[in-house]
Image 1: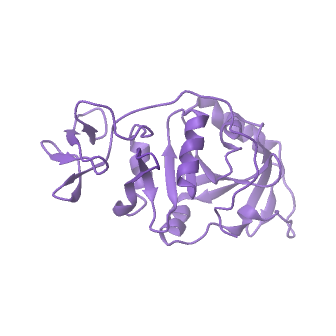
Image 2 (image 1 turned 30 degrees about the vertical axis):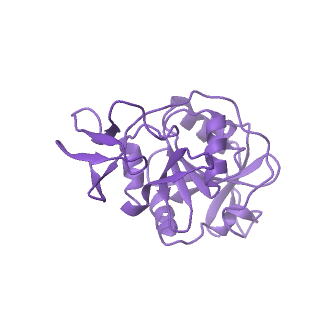
Length: 252
């Protein structure tokens, strides 16, 4: 089964505050993608408008539209966290523009030649915006900065301490429920793969199971990027019922 299998899920979760911004890593100069440097000039790869190179000392160097908001209403403020994640993938896959049926421009954080989109979400975001982006891209994986709220890691660790994992293909799988933490309430009903980034070398991947239950397991960031880059599927464990294979249950 494709790891973009869709699931029958409830409507999106509670509302949270949205975001808007205008920072981009790349502009075009003579049809070449370039990064912002002092004195550089370029145009937007999506709308062809003039861009300004912002190269200060407090924020990551970036491009900004001259005199108006970003041409993509979905664009999120670029941070070092975004840059670090994007750097794991080929440059040609980063900040890829496309238009919807109304002509509105949207720029994917990462888009592979196979059509897979990866969106990196740092700021709070409205559920309706997540739903629109997911419907537009369809084949999409969301990576969420789970360090933004101080309580999310505490809730996550407490939740795992109250569950028994099962071993599947060498991975500890937790079966959890959408109502157990704020992160799960925010993202558990989406029906796509979601990766929570708490820092460190692993992602916490969330995938659908049955009803309101979800599978949750750690997966190395480097391996995630390698599989996506090579066009290979993520572990099949995401879509099969975890089965116990001679594994003694233990409590975290």
